[in-house]
Length: 180
Image (cartoon, rainbow, N blue to C red; front, side):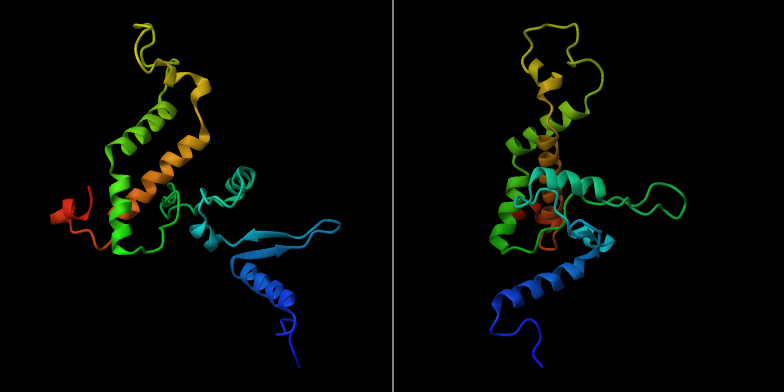
């Protein structure tokens, strides 16, 4: 007996492969009168990358709303934290160095700092409230300048940097040889 993924029918084989892949990471929810939906398994969320470029912004927003909360700690406190993005796959040693150099570059870190500072600043519209209106950078603190996408990308970049610098091939005694 030949299965539905017979050699003579590549479309059926592709559909079966897709079904098998989805079954590994998600549970199918049947809905009457509507297309079925797939709900990610809790353990699959650890591999979800909120900056994956082949998924649109709305799909990422929907995923963020559906992401399960981490289980509470045994002592009743907040659960264990999770990284913003999954650890990237291992790279060739040359590219590992590039990852570290990029994520420790002074300009990149200054931009990430500025984005984080703007989004985490509390108080008036400007840290120079009531001060010299000619102060450079005052526009950075206007409400219209804030961008959730920019904030997400800054946190994502810092997360990737943390992973790059925590790799086994970084010698703490000779860290300058491992990157910037």
